[in-house]
Image 1 (cartoon, each protein chain N blue to C red):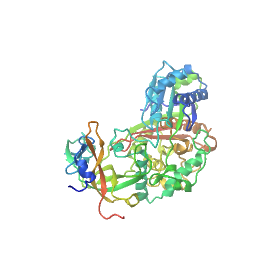
Image 2: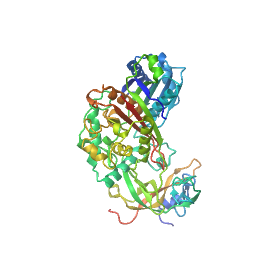
Image 3: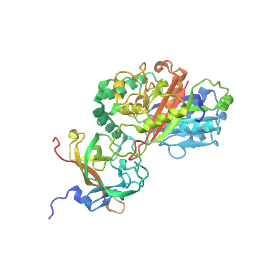
Image 4: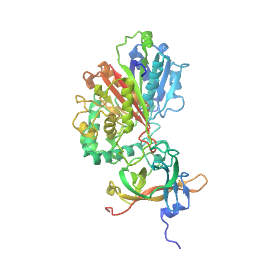
Length: 145
Length: 384
């Protein structure tokens, strides 16, 4: 018998909640990169928002991030469970910043520049019954308990 | 070459607040419209067209209002730019007047939120940020967290914006809240999105505001002397797609909105006597004033705490009480700002009057779009 599954391994069996957003094995965010200036975007765009001239090609982004800023959301519209930690996460390797939830750390211990790593998370069920997969980041390294 | 100014012939509001179901979107719009017409001494027959800003009003809200008001049959347009919707309607009316398409137009901003929105506003469900849990308060909370770290600012300085604006609203009969609040009350309020608490956030509100705008031909039609406040120009920009790992409080969208305001109005930043600023959250007033270039970068929180942006200070911001205390029925806000500027520039703002006000600016920022630094930003410049 396999041991209890983590949310990540469960999630791998489903499909991304939006097409083209992420790869499941291994977990990677999918962006675009300019073949001219090298600027990367997430999610992927049909143009380079930096130089506006180059062609873009699909790219997998680094799963290693750090918290640029964050908040603990205590009140949200109906149907959204609180509290949760929402952050601007920087992917320094790709020079990409994106918004995502951060887990694996109590709200009081989240800090600026804290290292985090990409992981998959269940994201509800599609109309055809398929499990949907989203993304979030988990605190890594030494974090105050 | 910028379009000609539009004269504000009349301005009127219904008091912002939380109203029961029988107070409808249409009835509030009618109240504001009739107040603006009465202020101008104008009849419905003089109105060429109706411009309406709203977000949650549903399809053809403007035509529903027109049918009850007695403006049925005339050109009616509905304008949605989220919290900049009302100001966007003002902009389109100004353009139509300058073009000579119309001579007298009524602009209404209206919103009935209390029966349609609960727990805070958020982006369109199709937006990627909304999918990961973004609510407006969260974005501003992350802005505040970074501002505190980058500028050696304090939580108390940010909270000072709420204390200041509530102190102003004591003198505003149109404001939802008219009681002063203390710094301790702001700091001790229930947390919404840390570090921001309930009193750092503008409320969910109902309300309506209206202005009657005209060009020189319209002034003649109404028999009004061309001596009152004028809309000199209305800037409109959208957020641009961001790349790299820059300052999340850079407010390039505000910088560009300011540039448009100065270009279209011919007014220079140093001439501004007061600002009605979109303080949907305390921190927003700070970073947007900095983005416009009206407060030095990184100094906005200190300016608020030192009284520089209070009535009697160097540059009064939100003498009306702002969104934090006047209330924020989103589509009505931009038109309510123009009403306040009109009263300030006429010198009839009573206890909240900015002495010697000759030139003023109103700023709205509406909505968010994943990957950009904003949805829409409007900048209205008016002179006495």
